Every structure is written in C-alpha cells, then in structure tokens.
Image (cartoon, rainbow, N blue to C red; front, side, top):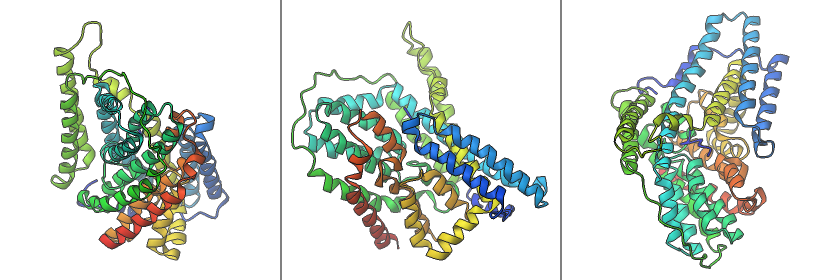
Amino acid sequence: MVRSLLVLLGVLLLPEIAMAAEFESLGLTGTQRGIYTVLIFIIAYGFVMTEEFTHLRKSKPVILAAGIIWAHAAVLAAQAGVSAEDMHKAFEYNLKEYAELMLFLLVAMTYINSMSERNVFEALRSWLVRKQFGYRKLFLITGVITFFLSSVADNLTAALLVGAVVMAVGADNPKFVSIGFVNLVVAANAGGAFCPFGDITTLMVWQAEYAEFFDFFKLFIPSLVNYAVPAAVMYFAVPDEQPKESSEAAVQLKTGAITICLMFLGTIATAVSFKQVLHLPPFMGMMVGLSVLMLYGYFLKVNYRVEGEEGFNVFNKVRHAEWDTLLFFFGVVFSVGGLGYIGYLELLSSAMYETLGATTANILVGLISAIVDNIPVMFAVLNMNLDMDLYQWLLVTLTAGVGGSLLSVGSAAGVALMGQSDHKYTFFSHLKWTPAIAGGYVASIVVHYLING
C-alpha cells in the first residue's frame, strides 16, 4: 500500500529557507541549456501523471530528471564562472532539505506499518462492517474518520484504510462506492491541511519555519468547511438503503497494538518538543521515537513470539515503508532545486506573486495542485524566498493541500482509490462532483479570511 504519508513531514532560530540566501541563482533561464532542463522536467512529470496507465513508478522518471537537470546546472555554473564551492552550497541545501524530511517521513511510515501489522486498522474496518450502518450513516462516519485520521497519518494512508471499509460494505452497490470514494478524497485532503503531520506540504512549511506548530490549527475550521460543503451536497445522492448483513468475525488486536498507538502520539509530541523547546530539527525527535519502537519491538519479540512465526520485527516495517514516495520526493526536491538554481523559481515568483499579488497567486497554487502534485508546487513556493505574512503562508498551505480534491488525479489519495475501486470510482465519476468540491474550496478560503485575515 502506498504511503505518501503522512504523508510526506527545522530549526527554530533561523528559517531554513533563508539558507537560499547563501547562494545566488545563475539567472540563465533564457539559455538553450536552461530551456532544455525545463523540457526534461515536463517530460518526467508527464510520466508521473500517467502512472495509473503506464504502471511506471513515479520515482523513476523524476530521479533521472533530477540527475540531468543538475548536470546541466553544473555546466551552466562553470560557463558563468561560478566556483564549484558555490555550486555545492546550492546542491547541499537541497540535500539537507531532503534528508530532514525523508528521515521524518520514514519514522512516521514505520509507525503506521507497525500499527497495521498489529491489526489496528483492520480491527477498525471489521468493527465498521459488522455494525451494519446504513449507507448514508456510513458515508458520514467514514468521511469524519478519514478527516481526523489524515491529520496524523497522511491523506493517502487514511483514504486507503477507510476505503477498504467502503469497498467491503458497498460491494453490491457501485453508486455508494463511487460517491463514498469522492467523499474520502475530499476528507483526506482537507484533514491533512490543518496539522503539520497531515501532509508533506504542511510539514515543509512547518520545517521552513514560516509557521509554528500550533499556527496550523488556525486552519481547522476552514479545512472542516472545505470537507463539509461538498459532503452536504453529496449526502442526498447517497442511496438511502441498508447494506447486506455481514457474517464477518471480529478482528482481534495483537499484543502491543494500543501501546504502539500511544508511542506514536508520544513520538509526535517529542518531535514538537525538540523543535519548540530544544530548537532542534523535529526529525531528531522522530528518530528518538523510532528507537523506542525498536526497543519495544525487541520486548514483543522476546516475550510474545508465537512458535513458527517470526514475531514483531521493526526492520520489516522499515523495509515496507513506501520507498517509491520517498524517492519520488528526492527527485522532486532536486529537480525543482536545480531549476531554481538556474533561475526559474525567481522567474515564476515574479510572474505569479509580483504580478498577481500574494492572495491571487496562493489561490492559483491550489488550482495548479489539482493537476500537478502539491509536493513540487509547494517546494517551489518555499524556494521563491517570498516575503509573506502568516495569513498568506497559511492560505497557500490550505489551498495546496485541498486543491488536489478538485480532480481525482490531483492527489495521491484519488489516484490510489481509483486503482482500489475496481472501476467503480473513476476520473469522470469524480468530475461530476467537482462543482460541489469547488464550492468547498471557495468557502474554505472565505472562512480563512474571516477568521484569520
């Protein structure tokens, strides 16, 4: 199962993005070699967007693009008389950005995999199926669970886990599965927007120190409105029927399941404390939490191992992390970073933010993220070194997070659910509800302005 988790999650004294000031871009956007790098990135991202049809993992083309872009950036730097040391500063800045986020996400993925292995999510799915809720009640319950679950697990993981419930109870009702999956995509993206742990984009803004940890909770009501508006419209289209009775047996939690859940919450608290109190990067707190999980895993393996089974092995959970997502993020960071070093982010910043203004540009970022994954979009915005206040940074965090709900291909959650739905949830079945989702998008921006503006 893909886990772009929690999907995808700085130091307090000096903003890390300010490190971009340590080097200057080359300003060679009009050169033939510079234009060639943009073309390479567009081609690579074309393969990313068609992953559903080509089955080519999204990490492969962007890593290749990153290598080609930086090779050309190095040649351009040499031609411009830039020293190798100065070029390395730009390169190492991207490496530092990636390393911190990668380690953070790896720990989060390991915890999610551990909870999954201990039957935490399967037990929740089994309970919902056995309760025999009506379709409309189940529509509301799954949406609310996904909204809150995606604030601690990533939006993709939350959508897939709750999607299994929708598929189980709606096996004989394609209409419910279709509309239920649209509901999950909107709920997952909205829930990930108000917590630094809910989405890679919010995590990037937090680690770049444009907003403090608790600042993001100012987006709770706008995010809730973003989900509630389309959910209210879709609710009346949900079949007012009862699913067939299920004879499924209850799934029992394995030993240590609840303890690992509490440890995950403790790890999140540790990461926040490391940043807010000790002024250390939050990934260090996450790594401390990983060490605690490893020690507890050893305890489980020694004391509760069933004969004939391997027992709890934390390194299996690390191995099963979504490496395609982590490596895709590597390709994105270095591709966008290379284009920024050549000078394209300054060009884009001038075209969008200086010409249109911050508010219009930030709303446009959300519309762009309906087509292009929000990770490269947000990373590009962060590296433009923009001078915006907290309201504007929260606005772009909100729009980049929820804009992907407008189209089924606009977020990893939508793409994954299309693959899981057995053709019951498609691009066009989602497009049918885009006007209602757009209404939620506009309403969330208005509410953000009224509350935080």
